[in-house]
Image (cartoon, rainbow, N blue to C red):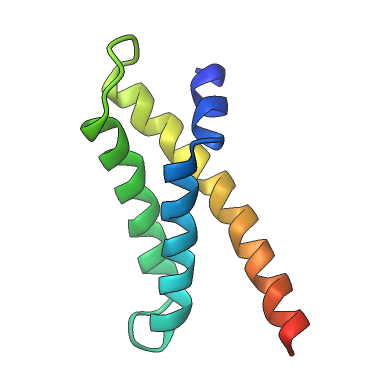
Length: 90
């Protein structure tokens, strides 16, 4: 399970989707809020990637659970970077 999480943490598509999620959240925060779109986006990415690109050696539930953990770690990093960039911009 740890190897699966490590491989998901460096997945470029997963990182790109989470970055897009954060950018979209900032653009639409006034209308949709912040927490709900982020939560739903994290779950969506965690489910859609293993469903569309399954690995025969990993059960779907394990891949989704590992994806949730990976997505939350990536989301925390991206949100931290977004806060730093917004503060530097003033």
